[in-house]
Length: 323
Ligand code: CA
Ligand code: CA
Image (cartoon, rainbow, N blue to C red; front, top):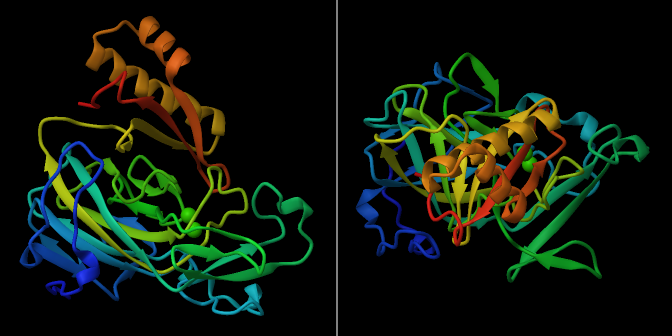
């Protein structure tokens, strides 16, 4: 077990651009998870640390390959696939009980010095066209990702895997669901707030699979995979519940749903937002649906994992709050 106060000035944490604004979180209120990985989310996983409600925690995450790819000549067929998709954790949040909601403020994401992407035959939307596997190492410097000698893109870190122990059984970290997991939602980034259902005592939060950048859809099954330190602030909500993950950022509220069938994921995310709008704005199902059709956005998170993930976005100028 590892419980350390954080003494790194990179994590001077300020909450910006979200509903609530607080000052710097005191260092002695912080915990760190380093060197502990899980490969499936499971109520049977032994917690790495126990933290109180209303606490900041820093997760040290490996990239989705477990750090096994460090150069362009890496051979994918020699990878140890048992080390794919690790998540740091799990963290037991004292007081979290089944039926509660775990509110997770993403305070900061500091990524490593280089990321990696891969193109693998059979994988992703273009997989049928790919003959030979290819990996590409991408240095990250001065807030830019060097894609190649001519192209650089902004470093815009997001969290691929974030979840709690699922309601039943063990779910590999590569699979998303109502517990969160591998949602690969590019909106889960610094300044956003994720709401996850709590199914088991302590919630058992784990985080991994940070991307220095990822486009909606994640068409090649990889973002710019990179190790990171992720600072979150966790809070337990006792007076509300969610059945599927929800998210907010400075401008929008989102419902998130995952399913083996993309069309079913679309229906689930849309129904979840419809219910939020009915409750919060006092509209009928039909009127809430028309409002969504007029001013809401259905968006892909990823279309390449064993379950695909979509989100439904509504502007806060129309729908001020989820609860
Ligand atoms: Ca992922
Ligand atoms: Ca990934």
